[in-house]
Figure 1 (cartoon, one colour):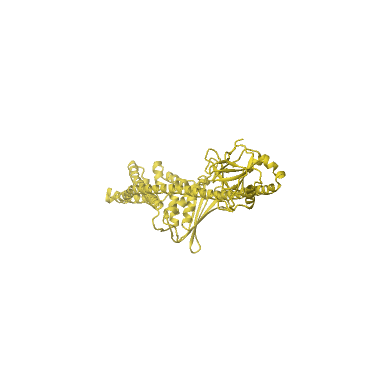
Figure 2 (tube, rainbow, N blue to C red; figure 1 turned 60 degrees about the vertical axis):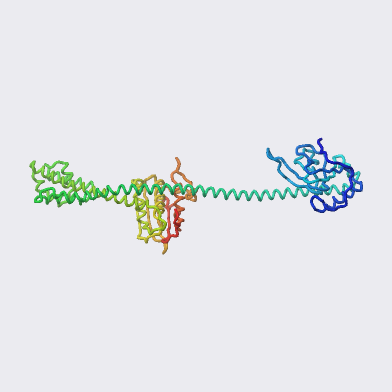
Length: 503
């Protein structure tokens, strides 16, 4: 057994002081009594004096004695892994050192080192065993002190457990707060990335719209100039019929396929000598055009056929000019919608026609709506003060999710209405399978999506952003399943928005 090498004496006289000079505290009554008994020489055991820094008990080593501190302080430490020893307690006068290892007869659980100069009463296992018979009065003093020490250590263990539990709860709460902050940071990062993409897309779209607008405008001006100039290229004295056919082509009203087939059959019977290709063109002429061409139609000579073909070309020129104008106007409308759809939110919110924004959005996603029946019920509403680019983004996300749900086939119903005096409501309904009940509460969660190989309803960052945009404008957005099937999204916006000016 390894034992410390302190200064020893048996028994040693004590001074008459009643206060521990190292701690300034009065000695416990039992300690004071023991000090008197030791001074009288009526005590078993050996008094050990340790200098500051001396190791009384070494962790991991066998211990067969207990040390009652009569004066001074002892520092307890415990090794944890490969790190330096961790402080685990402090003992003062009246406390026992080595009590647990002494009773358990196991190696010491921790190390005990003199924090100050220390005086102890050391009792070996044999001396402690003989104590009740040899010195019952001393045993009566020591044994209650041992019980008191054990009770105090148990109380400290329980207190430590309570402190650890409280700390664990605090750490858990902090962890949850950090997790929420992390999720918020991720959401903010995704939102910023998305907004940056939308800003870049807006710039690109604005540039493309500008580039498209110039050739479209030139094409329209060219068609108008051709319409005015072409009749003057023929002999003014004999150009009345050419002008009529040109105007009929430019103002031609599209007829159904069945009606055109009937007209072709009637013309073929009336004028069997006319070529079928000319009959097809003639079938598109209104009755006044057919009447104007009757003389040429009745004449079956080669010269009359050539004249008829030349006249029909004027009608076709009118048709081509009409197609150019219609196509040019359509391009202009698309360019205008691009500008309205992609304009970035300004520092101040604007008064916006919600119905117009929805129509612009439908035009932008027209490619997804080729096989979708769109039913619009757009009420006359007062302008809504909002960020138009952001609100158009909401309509886009909702409509595209509806298309995903319907696999780009079905019916899309869009309705606007007044809600009370201060709000407007927009409902967008689809004829898809609806939203499963377990998914419905999660549709606005960031990064939540069911766009997988087996998913039938696509939800992702778009709806989370839409939710944030609508709430930023002081509105609300919600989903529910219609009784007849399909999902319905309802967006409510205030007429006067308190939306922040930052995007």
